[in-house]
Length: 137
Image (cartoon, rainbow, N blue to C red; front, side):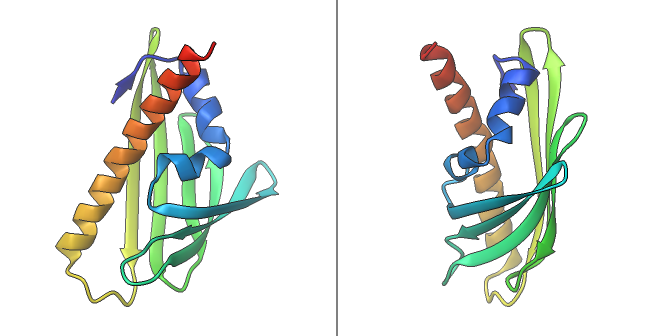
């Protein structure tokens, strides 16, 4: 998605851990602790029948941010990447997520559909947050 904002403006919003809950409507709790140049981010999400909890290491990259799973009893794999590509006054934003959920008796197609919906909503919510910030200037 192309967002009418500079890479720096979008990076600033993504760097604020408090914004993570607003970007993903499925995430209900976010806590973080600095770990070097990265942050350990603990999240709780709505899950399927009960909340999912996981701890990920979130680090800035040259192109945006990346996260990788540190610990979870619910997820066997969690990796995300925000890629921000400057396009003049705008930025092309790509959000990639790879997650594998343990112990869920739900077809993979349902899990995948929910994940795709969540990724789309996160990028749309980021665009809305950028627009709102610009309007409040």
